Length: 216
Ligand SMILES: NC(=O)c1ccc[n+]([C@@H]2O[C@H](COP(=O)([O-])OP(=O)(O)OC[C@H]3O[C@@H](n4cnc5c(N)ncnc54)[C@H](OP(=O)(O)O)[C@@H]3O)[C@@H](O)[C@H]2O)c1
Image 1 (cartoon, rainbow, N blue to C red):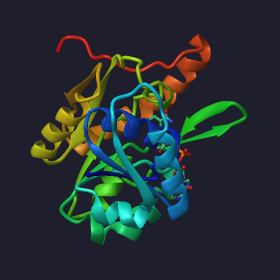
Image 2 (tube, protein in one colour; image 1 turned 45 degrees about the horizontal axis):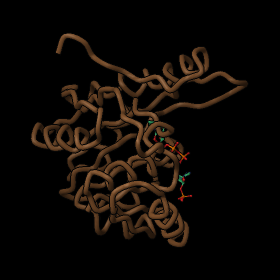
Image 3 (cartoon, protein in one colour; image 1 turned 90 degrees about the vertical axis):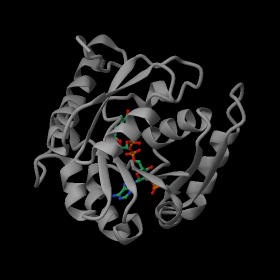
Image 4 (cartoon, rainbow, N blue to C red; image 1 turned 120 degrees about the vertical axis):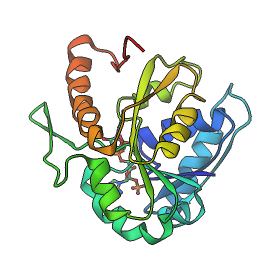
């Protein structure tokens, strides 16, 4: 099962929907058990999609039961959430999609992080998990349109090659996504930061932009 901590927001819901449509069993976690359940019910009500398995509940349940666990909270809650569930995430692949940014007066900025990348911060807390930075550049709005073919690359960074390979395979279960090995977790910072600029580009072109790497 794939669990999503902070799975009730647009990015968590979008990944839940698309991975469930690809045949994965999904668990949506929330700080409020009832909200996790409610969002899972809402996803199950989406029409014109293949049969899917989505359950929901608390972040604690998500951390306990996920074989792969996605972290999809805002950066503000990232560190404490990981500290809270570190023991339960031991030995798991933990996919971190968190981007450190803030909005002020219509302007988006990246936030300073204590280590080089948010994903490295996660690995520092989750010493016994295999942290993978991925999906930062994939638009939640697009993921949430079930029959829209995605059209972008997912740059995947991890210090564990086996985990990188597994997440590439997972990303490619979503139609139109291509997984790219982005190297070590250190490199995740470039991917995280560029996401903020996609939001600027989206404002200019009134679209949901993303990334495609040429030459591969
Ligand atoms: N939206 C996008 O297109 C997109 C694309 C790529 C990456 N991302 C990244 O993915 C992450 C999730 O994005 P999102 O737009 O879905 O975010 P969001 O809606 O702001 O937050 C997701 C969920 O996190 C929980 N949460 C809120 N504050 C929290 C806190 N202080 N501590 C712990 N949990 C908290 C909430 O769930 P409960 O109240 O149910 O606990 C909320 O529904 C973000 O880090 C974002 O940068 C987003």
